[in-house]
Image: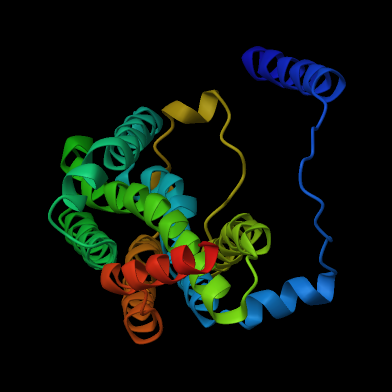
Length: 283
């Protein structure tokens, strides 16, 4: 808590310094759009809407597991070292997410288009969830086995973080060609909004899951980190938790694949045409 407090204080201090010392030097006189114009700009861009809805579907699916995984370790994986296993699992997953953004994506981009990498990512996440479900029913006790599904799921999440930014950028160029207006501020602001929307939906779904299967969502104290909670819950609750945190995300990811394949058409070839069209307009 002291480290968090120090970070919070430093954040406020440096934000104030930035606010006081940095002055905007505007060289462009642009009329600010109204709220109505912002929504019309987004709704008139069918490719931006396709990306936004895909982000909500896919992120909700992945965030659902992220919200429930601590309860999986607490009530299902069990053991007196469940919290240490949970921390190790998250550390490995975070490392895979960063590696996928910095290493895996540039490597895959040499061989595949961005749209193909998107589908590869979702299929990889589906494989990860399937492996996680199978391992959960084997009653394994080694956290290192869980690194297998973690590799697929967290790597996919990292790739998707990069891809959604690229797809939104593509939709900005598409919108400029279609509507003769560049609404990048409106479209990119939606990225933060839809991520928070997906997070909110996932938290609600996770709360419903915990309520249905009668699992406590109270904060874990230091003393409870060495308690084996798996002995206090019935098998039906554990099975329900496993199904909820794997089957629902798999369904959501399949829905994301279907939606994106049907609605998004800004392939690499199409983007080359759009870029050429924009270049001609600026000549």
